[in-house]
Amino acid sequence: MNHLIDILQLTEAEIDELIAVAEDIIANPAKYAEKCHGKKLATLFFEPSTRTRLSFEAAMYELGGNVLGFSEAQSSSASKGESVSDTIRTVGCYADIIAMRHPKEGAPVVACQSSTVPIINAGDGGHNHPTQTLTDLLTIHREKGTFSGLTIGLCGDLKFGRTVHSLISAMSRYENVKFVLISPDELKVPDYIIEDFLEANNIEYVETTSLEEAMPELDILYMTRVQRERFFNEQDYIRLRDSYILDMEKLKGAKKDMCILHPLPRVNEIAKDVDNDPRACYFKQVLNGKFIRMALILKLLEID
Amino acid sequence: MIIGQIKNGIVLDHITAGMGMELYNLLGLDRLNCQVALIKNAESKKMGKKDIIKIDEEIDFDVDALGYIDTNITVNIIKDGKLFKRKHLEVPEKVVNIIRCKNPRCITTTEQELPHVFKLTNREKKIYRCIYCESKGK
Image 1: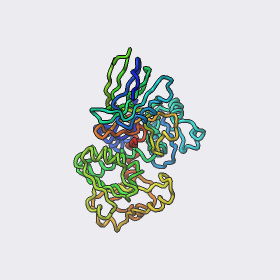
Image 2: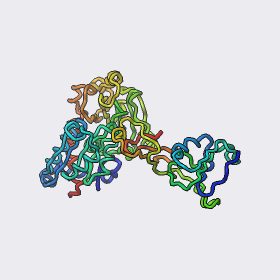
Image 3: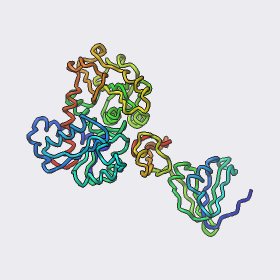
Image 4: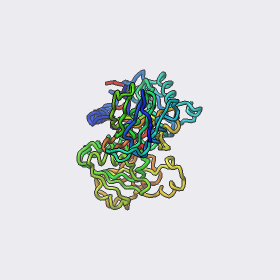
């Protein structure tokens, strides 16, 4: 059974293959319009989402398939105390593939243990978000043409930002990549990311609190939102939420071809006027998310 | 202090001094009906001081749990009053329900029937991580 729980389950060759299929989908959408005819995707979102859920659904519709599911835990039997494993066994009776988001870290691992159909982790708490990483990788590839030799700045909530963790683990496999980790002390990258990916692979990295100082050397700036839903204490959230705001003034120090990414949604961490700057790639990223998810669905359903 | 020999059972020897009681609790030896002796701070040529546990019955226990706590421990199986087998322990690849995940965001906090499984991710530093959320075992 094929599942995607962690981006590292995919080899670099498999990522290249997914990117190639996504590029082909972009170039020849009609070729893929009926590939999933008769197949059903279940989107099980125990936690709200706009982009991830809708992009999965749009992806399946564009492949000619159908979609069922729920968009919040309250409208599922989880609200009655049903376990993840029972929900998955049930949904496996109705769907050919499941995309699942859950607020608890590791829930997709539990789902895989009882599933009869492929599971895609669409985000588990502050842990992993592999399809966002595939989206990020497709965007980086389309904008920069390579994964090697890039200096990547990650800015904001690096502690609970699951997209950050997945992106670091994926990019750690490429040559001459450098990470600049920009965050307040309270929201630094977890120790396992430092130990298991950066230090274990001898990847160059710097931790800093200053976005302005880091800016000039960056090829990619990956902004993130400080996520209210990850804090147990509202006061901590309020204190940290405005730590970094990217505006045109701060961009003055950036390279002309720097690529600004953001997994979205944003609150105020990127000023609106940055949207019109050619370096802003976050809405391209949104569109790329649909194409790479189409490629992933085809791969996991083993459809050529 | 004299503690008699056992006929059929298990002797856990070379336990790091002070760890005996933790091991006693972890293995659930308090629930046994047979004789169990916990010897603290026994003299040892090799270790200076050590703890020893003698169990006067052949019981099944989690060898991985012992290896997780202390690889110095030797497990001596006694049959008919003689040493039948001696096992040396290794750091286990996986431990189940020995350490509990303390991450409040881990799925194990809401699905309490799930086993707490930790996988060895760094043998040199003896780091274990939760298989669900990857938090470090403490």
